[in-house]
Length: 177
Image (cartoon, rainbow, N blue to C red; front, side, top):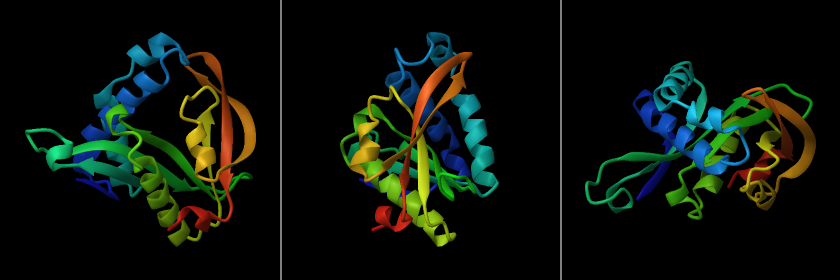
Protein backbone atom coordinates (compact mmCIF):
# COMPACT_ATOMS: atom_id res chain seq x y z
CA UNK A 1 0.00 0.00 0.00
CA UNK A 2 1.24 3.50 -0.79
CA UNK A 3 0.11 6.57 1.10
CA UNK A 4 0.69 10.25 0.28
CA UNK A 5 1.03 12.43 3.37
CA UNK A 6 2.83 15.42 4.85
CA UNK A 7 6.44 14.58 5.70
CA UNK A 8 7.64 14.21 9.29
CA UNK A 9 11.19 14.66 10.60
CA UNK A 10 11.49 10.86 10.86
CA UNK A 11 11.09 10.72 7.04
CA UNK A 12 14.24 12.77 6.41
CA UNK A 13 16.61 9.82 5.94
CA UNK A 14 14.25 8.21 3.44
CA UNK A 15 13.79 11.49 1.57
CA UNK A 16 17.57 11.96 1.38
CA UNK A 17 17.98 8.43 0.02
CA UNK A 18 15.28 8.98 -2.63
CA UNK A 19 16.88 12.29 -3.65
CA UNK A 20 20.31 10.71 -4.19
CA UNK A 21 19.01 7.56 -5.92
CA UNK A 22 16.77 9.61 -8.23
CA UNK A 23 19.54 12.01 -9.22
CA UNK A 24 21.94 9.16 -9.94
CA UNK A 25 19.46 7.27 -12.13
CA UNK A 26 17.78 10.22 -13.84
CA UNK A 27 20.77 12.46 -14.47
CA UNK A 28 23.45 9.91 -15.44
CA UNK A 29 24.90 11.26 -18.68
CA UNK A 30 23.12 14.59 -18.13
CA UNK A 31 25.09 15.99 -15.18
CA UNK A 32 28.84 15.73 -14.53
CA UNK A 33 29.73 12.36 -12.99
CA UNK A 34 31.56 13.97 -10.01
CA UNK A 35 28.31 15.74 -9.06
CA UNK A 36 26.44 12.43 -8.97
CA UNK A 37 29.13 10.45 -7.15
CA UNK A 38 29.55 13.29 -4.66
CA UNK A 39 25.93 13.16 -3.53
CA UNK A 40 25.39 12.17 0.08
CA UNK A 41 22.12 10.75 1.39
CA UNK A 42 22.93 11.81 4.99
CA UNK A 43 23.71 15.38 3.85
CA UNK A 44 20.45 15.50 1.87
CA UNK A 45 18.59 14.06 4.86
CA UNK A 46 19.95 16.86 7.04
CA UNK A 47 18.76 19.45 4.55
CA UNK A 48 15.25 17.98 4.33
CA UNK A 49 15.06 17.60 8.11
CA UNK A 50 15.65 21.36 8.43
CA UNK A 51 13.03 22.08 5.75
CA UNK A 52 10.42 19.90 7.47
CA UNK A 53 11.15 21.25 10.96
CA UNK A 54 10.89 24.84 9.70
CA UNK A 55 7.39 24.17 8.33
CA UNK A 56 8.38 23.68 4.68
CA UNK A 57 5.91 22.02 2.34
CA UNK A 58 7.12 18.44 1.89
CA UNK A 59 4.84 15.52 1.01
CA UNK A 60 6.00 11.92 0.82
CA UNK A 61 4.83 8.75 -0.88
CA UNK A 62 5.25 6.04 1.74
CA UNK A 63 5.10 2.35 0.83
CA UNK A 64 4.21 -0.32 3.35
CA UNK A 65 3.29 -3.98 3.37
CA UNK A 66 3.84 -5.96 0.19
CA UNK A 67 4.94 -2.84 -1.74
CA UNK A 68 8.11 -2.77 0.37
CA UNK A 69 8.89 -6.47 0.33
CA UNK A 70 8.72 -9.41 2.70
CA UNK A 71 10.06 -7.43 5.66
CA UNK A 72 7.03 -5.12 5.45
CA UNK A 73 8.76 -1.99 6.76
CA UNK A 74 7.53 1.48 5.89
CA UNK A 75 9.67 3.18 3.25
CA UNK A 76 9.70 6.61 1.58
CA UNK A 77 9.56 5.98 -2.18
CA UNK A 78 8.92 9.51 -3.45
CA UNK A 79 8.56 13.11 -2.34
CA UNK A 80 7.75 16.63 -3.44
CA UNK A 81 8.76 19.99 -1.98
CA UNK A 82 6.95 23.21 -2.76
CA UNK A 83 6.77 26.77 -1.53
CA UNK A 84 4.94 30.00 -1.92
CA UNK A 85 7.03 32.27 -4.10
CA UNK A 86 6.38 35.66 -5.52
CA UNK A 87 7.97 35.31 -8.94
CA UNK A 88 7.17 36.50 -12.42
CA UNK A 89 6.32 32.94 -13.46
CA UNK A 90 3.82 32.12 -10.68
CA UNK A 91 3.18 32.53 -6.96
CA UNK A 92 3.80 28.88 -6.08
CA UNK A 93 6.77 26.67 -6.97
CA UNK A 94 7.41 22.95 -6.92
CA UNK A 95 11.10 22.78 -6.07
CA UNK A 96 11.66 19.02 -6.19
CA UNK A 97 9.71 15.95 -7.25
CA UNK A 98 11.37 12.54 -7.16
CA UNK A 99 10.07 8.96 -7.21
CA UNK A 100 12.28 5.86 -7.02
CA UNK A 101 12.62 4.00 -10.33
CA UNK A 102 10.87 0.87 -9.03
CA UNK A 103 7.81 2.95 -8.09
CA UNK A 104 7.41 4.99 -11.28
CA UNK A 105 4.44 4.52 -13.61
CA UNK A 106 2.09 4.06 -10.63
CA UNK A 107 0.67 7.58 -10.53
CA UNK A 108 2.76 8.66 -7.53
CA UNK A 109 4.24 11.70 -9.28
CA UNK A 110 0.75 12.87 -10.18
CA UNK A 111 -0.49 12.34 -6.61
CA UNK A 112 2.51 14.17 -5.15
CA UNK A 113 2.06 17.12 -7.55
CA UNK A 114 -1.62 17.32 -6.62
CA UNK A 115 -0.81 17.25 -2.89
CA UNK A 116 1.66 20.11 -3.31
CA UNK A 117 -0.77 22.10 -5.47
CA UNK A 118 -3.62 21.60 -2.98
CA UNK A 119 -1.41 22.78 -0.12
CA UNK A 120 -0.30 25.88 -2.04
CA UNK A 121 -3.87 26.63 -3.21
CA UNK A 122 -4.95 26.55 0.44
CA UNK A 123 -2.27 29.21 1.06
CA UNK A 124 -3.87 31.43 -1.63
CA UNK A 125 -1.50 30.57 -4.48
CA UNK A 126 -3.29 30.89 -7.80
CA UNK A 127 -0.54 29.59 -10.09
CA UNK A 128 2.36 27.15 -9.93
CA UNK A 129 5.62 26.55 -11.77
CA UNK A 130 8.47 24.06 -11.79
CA UNK A 131 11.97 24.21 -13.31
CA UNK A 132 13.09 20.95 -14.93
CA UNK A 133 16.45 20.12 -16.49
CA UNK A 134 15.81 20.25 -20.23
CA UNK A 135 17.53 16.88 -20.73
CA UNK A 136 15.52 15.20 -17.96
CA UNK A 137 14.12 12.05 -19.60
CA UNK A 138 10.90 12.38 -17.55
CA UNK A 139 10.20 15.95 -18.70
CA UNK A 140 7.14 14.73 -20.61
CA UNK A 141 5.45 14.15 -17.23
CA UNK A 142 4.92 17.89 -16.71
CA UNK A 143 3.28 18.43 -20.09
CA UNK A 144 1.02 15.41 -19.51
CA UNK A 145 0.04 17.03 -16.21
CA UNK A 146 -1.08 20.10 -18.19
CA UNK A 147 1.99 22.27 -17.61
CA UNK A 148 2.60 24.90 -20.26
CA UNK A 149 6.10 25.90 -21.35
CA UNK A 150 6.83 29.17 -19.54
CA UNK A 151 10.56 29.89 -19.81
CA UNK A 152 14.01 28.55 -20.58
CA UNK A 153 17.17 29.18 -18.62
CA UNK A 154 20.37 27.68 -17.30
CA UNK A 155 21.53 26.59 -13.88
CA UNK A 156 25.04 25.96 -12.61
CA UNK A 157 25.46 22.35 -11.47
CA UNK A 158 28.95 21.44 -10.33
CA UNK A 159 30.53 24.18 -12.45
CA UNK A 160 28.63 23.18 -15.59
CA UNK A 161 25.86 25.30 -17.10
CA UNK A 162 22.84 23.06 -17.64
CA UNK A 163 19.74 24.02 -19.66
CA UNK A 164 16.44 24.06 -17.81
CA UNK A 165 12.82 24.57 -18.79
CA UNK A 166 10.00 26.01 -16.69
CA UNK A 167 6.43 24.71 -16.83
CA UNK A 168 3.47 26.63 -15.45
CA UNK A 169 -0.08 25.91 -14.33
CA UNK A 170 -2.63 28.69 -14.06
CA UNK A 171 -5.00 28.38 -12.44
CA UNK A 172 -3.41 26.11 -9.86
CA UNK A 173 -6.83 24.49 -9.44
CA UNK A 174 -6.14 22.59 -12.68
CA UNK A 175 -3.83 20.35 -10.61
CA UNK A 176 -6.12 19.93 -7.63
CA UNK A 177 -8.72 17.13 -7.66
